[in-house]
Length: 257
Image 1 (tube, helix red, strand yellow):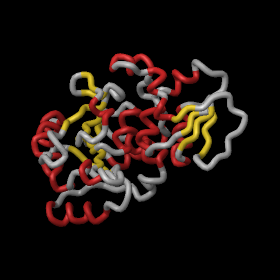
Image 2: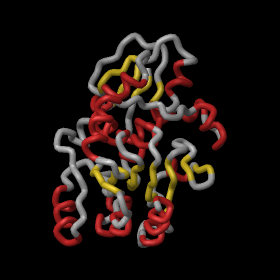
Image 3: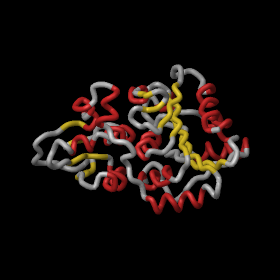
Image 4: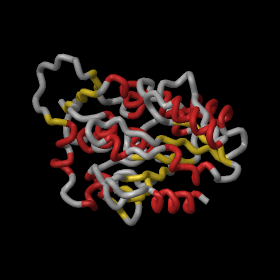
């Protein structure tokens, strides 16, 4: 029995080690945030997933989800050995529909600029107006992957700067995680701060450009400029939590060019 005790992004990170756990036990039950059930059941059909309010009996062994690393990961090189790549399986037909509707022949970039993490969310977030160099990329459309109420940000962006970022009203990016993953997979690239979106995009294997505020240890597990956990995630490290994002955003945009 593996039980989750951290945020939804962290849960996705540690799910990368489930295949290693499965090879060592006869039956595996994993307690998760219920929002993750559709995408995880499609991705790990042989695992018994239960919500966080479930009552569990008759188990032989238990471990917290975030402690799985203590069983497998002793050095950076162990991540590639024991942690899966591209392990989330999205809704492919839904993703194709979304791409056809949103991209319309152009490059499609999904963006997420805010973290709601208690205590450190503001340090990890980027004011959307600071992403203006990104929005000048030619032949590119943008879609919001941001969870929570972001309508005012996008309204002000279009009103002041004439920049339109599409929203998909049929997908609640906070609660409809399966829909969000289909939307992420419809994108050519994802630009995000350190939040759950970065984990979903990395676990789906989408080329991702992540602005890292240096608040979370796992984004510092790197191979060159890329995450050791998610090899399609390129990291742009902020010098410190109070430093401006200008240099990182400019380098990110140059890479996208």
